[in-house]
Amino acid sequence: MAILKLYGYYKSTCTWRVATVLYEAKVPFQFIPVDVLNGEHKTPGFLDKQPFGQIPYIDDDGFILYESRAICRYIAAKHPESKLVPTDPKRHALFEQAAASECFNFEGQAGPIILEIWGKALSGLKGDEDVVSARTAALDAKLDGYNAILSKQRYIAGDELTLVDLYHLPHAPIIQAKTGVMTRKSHVARWYTDLASRPSWRAFEDGVKSMLEY
Image 1 (cartoon, rainbow, N blue to C red):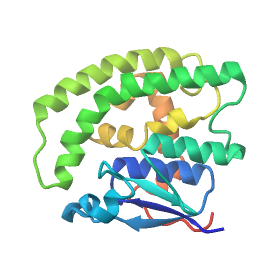
Image 2: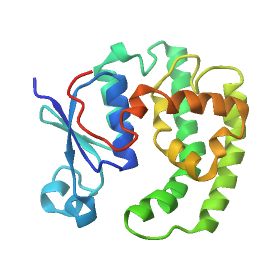
Image 3: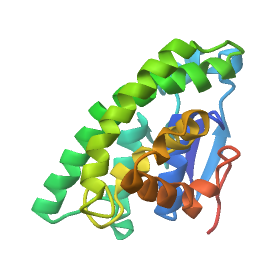
Image 4: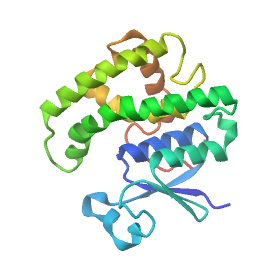
């Protein structure tokens, strides 16, 4: 069987997210760099695979898939032994609840921070510190809810690691390095430290690279 190919930029946060999940599921993959700084993701050949001109996408033996969270769900479904998505109906419902919370409560604030402190820097631009401050304050308030959840369980969807926890990578470490917000609350700090110390994240701290064996 052909090895899975991950197309992206080595320090694209969404590419990082997919690589982390591939590592957790112990899926060998070849990283194919996309020269986004020179517009390769907007070329006809790339747009044929990803019509929005965004990264990453995967080619799994001819099966093309884009959007990082969709890719992560596919990986988890194809490799159920990873146990990254619960199958029990009630645990799965809690997983979906947590996934919605990540999307609307964490990512809603984290995404704009990442754009200012990471996305613009990659393009040689200076981020807006006022936006960073305002969004960090809003994220800090959202993390009160996280802290309440994590005071009762180890991870966001329960006591077992799931995709939802991994979805927070790599945004959380980048934001933490800039603002320190991820360690201001005790239960969030414990959970964040756990995630940031996992081998799946540490393997790509300096950027995504091929992982052909584990």
